[in-house]
Image (cartoon, rainbow, N blue to C red; front, top):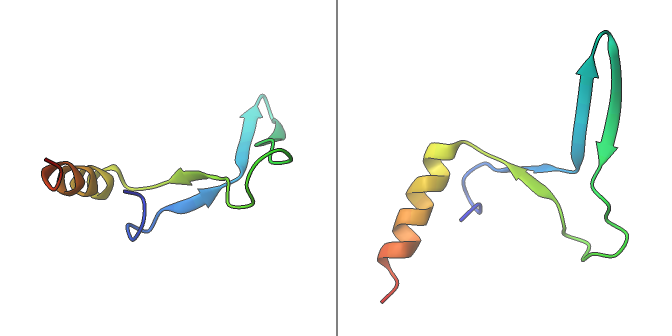
Length: 57
């Protein structure tokens, strides 16, 4: 359901506090090459979920 909705690949997080920052990457060493989080507009995602759910028996 995250295909064709302009979902962006996310490979970790950036944390900011008190003028300091750090990066936290997802551990990818033991996973398939296409492993990544997704950032997306929730409305489009929900529409895709509804469409998928309505196509199931």
